[in-house]
Image 1 (cartoon, rainbow, N blue to C red):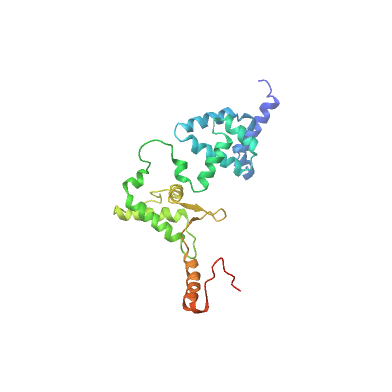
Image 2: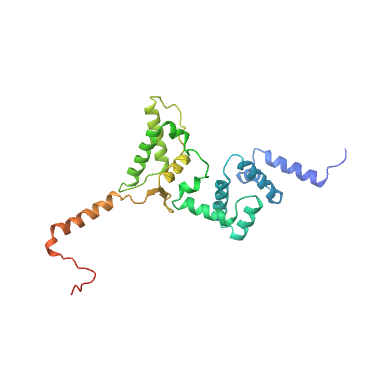
Length: 236
């Protein structure tokens, strides 16, 4: 038998180390190593095209754009990458991302197709949607607001089992936390950039009302001590 080449010896040694029971934790990470030179943009474009058959191009474009910007990829590289994979341009992706993050949720999900846009779960349980929305608003308005989408998901899950009078026998939620985050956005909620907790603009917290009420009461009980000054008058 001919002697093994240097490459064969190296491969055999590497395989022995990989499958050795004594290998350390750092070698476990080697399993996930990938030669980035073998990752072609065309391969990414292929999987992107596959995803487009199941999901809106707009959603995918915004997802890719926000991901690239989150990791501080430059605008120029972001633009080139999005074009190479067949996505929206950077400008279009940025505009739709802005609408997603800043109130225009209905416009973001509106694809101008006729017919009702609905969620099959809430089509079946419209009362539960109203309960869930009310629950979210109340929780967000509490003085020590610590409400999360996870709590909303748990509330919906509990009410679902109560409505259907069935016993919960697993940990799976009837509506995922991710779906509940989308629900909150659809109901008009925003997410705090630091705490990532939802809040509703235009709904005052209880602590705000508590501080305002005595302030107003002070004026009402001492109205004789104050007088109104019009904009064209000199208070002196």
